[in-house]
Length: 88
Image 1 (cartoon, rainbow, N blue to C red):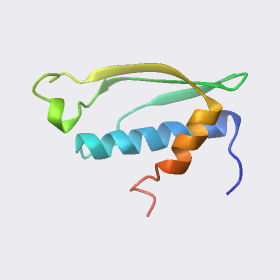
Image 2 (cartoon, one colour; image 1 turned 180 degrees about the vertical axis):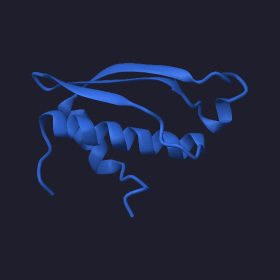
Image 3 (cartoon, rainbow, N blue to C red; image 1 turned 120 degrees about the vertical axis):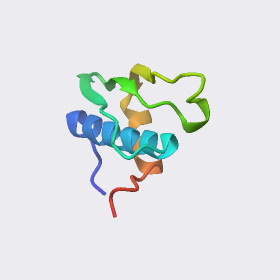
């Protein structure tokens, strides 16, 4: 596998994060998550109206909002450990 870097890493990280969220929330659509490479080894990830985890739906019926900054090294590790169930 080619070492992912920059915006390509951010794109793959966002896609894999959305796949994992879809799996744990048990929804039929892929949640909309945006990522961008900020430079200096940082990735920004954000999204709104995301589905709640299936066990927390009663407590958070309107979903949740995501905003975080992640180091590229952590994003690369996440991509490695979380294959998307849609990539079959």
